[in-house]
Length: 344
Ligand SMILES: NC(=O)c1ccc[n+]([C@@H]2O[C@H](COP(=O)([O-])OP(=O)(O)OC[C@H]3O[C@@H](n4cnc5c(N)ncnc54)[C@H](O)[C@@H]3O)[C@@H](O)[C@H]2O)c1
Image 1 (spheres, rainbow, N blue to C red):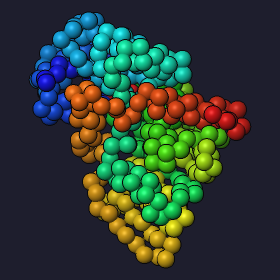
Image 2: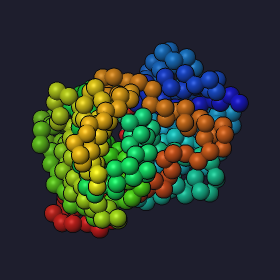
Image 3: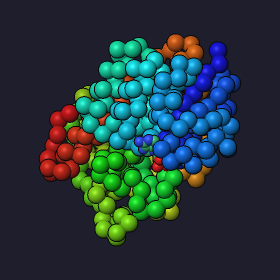
């Protein structure tokens, strides 16, 4: 079976991950690019082959296109992804699924109504080290996970997005919505849910725009840092820090403190997992490195999504998984805003 794929939004994530991974997939025969900035669509069509659509409806109403990647900025996902699902497309939607539960529910409802596939690009689930860590935790090799700490930070989206200036939409409240919490934080909340097979139930947090300024030199409207305390349904306690001001090097690490040892993930560039047992033994796993903004490798997300469509499989990240993570991130924002503990 060969697929025609439409990509909406031809910025950085489309250029660095979706388009190359669709191009490399043997079941994709054509990619059609759409962006309201047509030059961006033309640029990707030149690099990856394929054609350009001049309107979004040209993609959404074309019955020969089976799959849509929604790579638009956050405030549009509920519009494009919902319409695509209702028009019979299978949709891979970028994270965060939306900025509000109401909008996120529109997408998930459209999926339920149509039965088409919907996956949200919480790509942390797909990395080899995270997959291996999930196996270790599920097997209880090192006992139950008692506490954890996780972080995700880099030097900021004005170095990443297609608009590499301080006027980037990532810094605007109405478009990015949740700042670094919705950009990087939601990845790790989803990862914790996945690794622990548990859900964050109570949160507390502090946030701030500590360093980033907009095009007018004013502090940005959304947080560039947020530090959280989390409690899960099963009673696990942990901390999480998300930052757009880790200048010098990305940090994408998670440490799980278990009854019989410690599992460190992406703490060292040499060993993607390091285990230190209660007895002091060290076990290192060399798996592939995680993608960084400077080092893009195949995430496996597109191949997995094509397989879901082709083989009628359930996506590894469902709409309801994305709703759970968004709910936690919205709770974190509320906790930070009101200086309180929020029960999700
Ligand atoms: N999964 C990940 O690891 C990951 C990483 C980065 C970004 N993202 C997500 O991907 C999405 C896009 O981010 P990006 O980094 O590519 O941003 P970007 O600014 O580089 O690109 C966004 C593109 O969408 C286009 N666009 C925006 N609104 C549009 C509209 N209404 N109609 C048509 N085109 C429109 C813009 O013109 C731009 O070309 C965001 O939701 C972001 O959170 C996910």
